[in-house]
Image 1 (cartoon, rainbow, N blue to C red):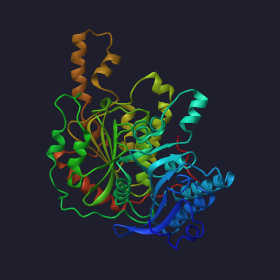
Image 2: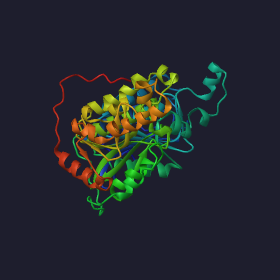
Image 3: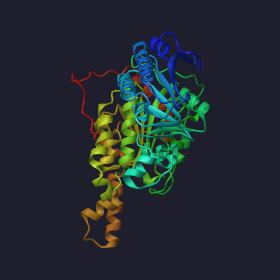
Image 4: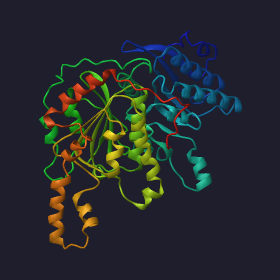
Length: 451
């Protein structure tokens, strides 16, 4: 890594395990910090914490993204509380960057104890396959719980990709981690005061997308990969999926449409039928908030029968966590377009950016079913005393009367029912129309999102 930039005087005055520089990525300036190596495996001294804070503050003041590559054994025990002070200063500086400039960090080795929380403060964290991160290590876990775990079992990249949601992307090595940071920042503006850079593409915005509709199976309960639908709509079929292994029943990805970066949120029918559970609600809420913070328009693809039922989810706070997704969409001021592909039932209809929640354009395919619940469930509640043959007739009547998008369209809750082949054209035109969207923000210190 090149010597620290003189634009970061603390980095120059206090050498240690951390180095910082002002550099360029694809012609754009970024602040890059790197922690690792040294005599004590990247242990962070007070000076390192101050260097990190100086780098973060410089990124925030100059309006450029903050990128970091971290491998650290934790706060330097030789310095004691002074090292903790330095880490605290760095954490506070990262918080000041939040929502002002993108903060993207990569873990390329062990990231232990307090410094591991820096990954949690970032907008997105990349991890190499051999990296691990935890605040309490295997020895402490064994002492307090009696459970013996290897470092990768406790906090390896696989754990954070599939179970905690910390890792947005997992890659083989350090070089791939740096490339992933570059891929991410390419979709993002340098700061909240700028627009995201436009991409060049020769993919026509009016290209028909019959393949999108062809993804739906003949059976209304059949599974399909919603990413195929998204790829048909976006430029050149390119998706940068984030947190792919965590809550796979909800897809979150960055892409471009007409050269404009957009965030995509989509129910995934091949994973628990696309139902929403606690991790999916958290994943979606975090991604919607991230896109809203940096002016990235949102495209929501809806196909969900509702929230996943169960005592365990309810006891763990399904109401509170489901509200996170509703809160994130209701708060978002970026251009928002939603497309109902097939099912949109009950509370999940509300939280997946329905018209009432403030979606700017709510579209539906002719196959869309927008209702409180499916026909079978409705008939079992309303006509449970009828025999099986009569219930089958009532189910068919319910489907014909209510399970189509035209009832919602009559009430103004669906703006347009479109042919799947027209999806890319209509969505691209909508984002062009909404490019100058402005909303007046409510005067308050901050909102109180359900955490």
